[in-house]
Image 1 (cartoon, rainbow, N blue to C red):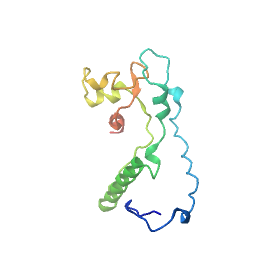
Image 2: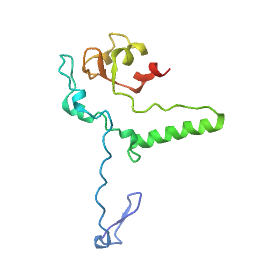
Image 3: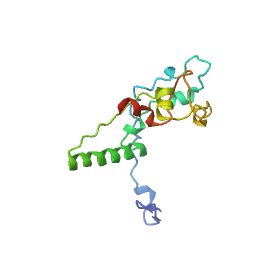
Image 4: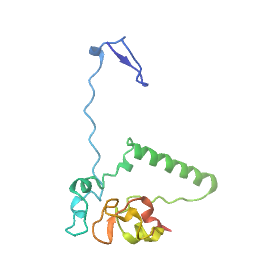
Length: 145
């Protein structure tokens, strides 16, 4: 006999036989337009992207309303929408940016020095010598300013 409330505090007042069966787990939303592992697994000597990492790209977790990243994204968008209402300013949301960027976009445009440890293959996934999986969302900053 166990009963739990929303705070996970449990008491022994109910029996399991009174619990209703749960519905089947909802299916995951379809993968995003960048969820094409072959795109990242190029036959290039500098490519250090494993099939596992390639399979994780393009899942669009930020678009899933119940995912923590989607919840945070929604809160941020709501905040900026409220600012737009308050001061007649329009904020543009850039979404679904390509995860493959150039080294120029990811590092040089942001003044990250050539010898910075973040450029090392141990810290960055390279597709080729000059193209890589972005390591942060600021990699698109220079093209949108």
